[in-house]
Image 1 (tube, rainbow, N blue to C red):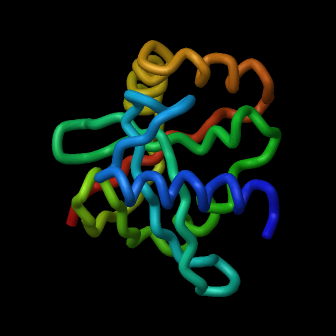
Image 2 (image 1 turned 90 degrees about the horizontal axis):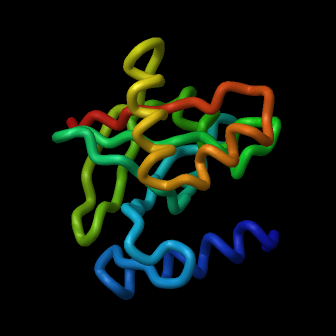
Amino acid sequence: MTETNDWNAKIIDEFRANDGKLGGPFEGADMLLLHTWGAKTGAERVNPLAYQPLGDDIAIFASKAGADTNPDWFYNLKAHPDVTIEVGTDTVAARARVAEGEERERIWARQKEIMPGFAEYETKTSRQIPVVILERV
């Protein structure tokens, strides 16, 4: 198991043991578990992510902590946009789409206000960090 997978597994276990609440660096943050299916393998993948509520929908961010490449989950949901999310104690089906233009800019600006670490991620990479909208189905 890679270091990232081990880190994520601990967060996932804590999330599920505490009704979607996390401590440590994520204490008080809006966090969810995103279930995607591998673009190449079709295998289910689960990733803990910060999110921003948008009414009935949710925004997530393919920041990868400012790396120069998008996270694997982003490619998975582009290939298979029907996903499942765990928010608190609820498990919900959703369809993913990438936000563009003014919609993306508005949501991204708000996320940087809510969690300033996202502004730092933006300075570490030349790529535009994708904002993904999860629309409940």
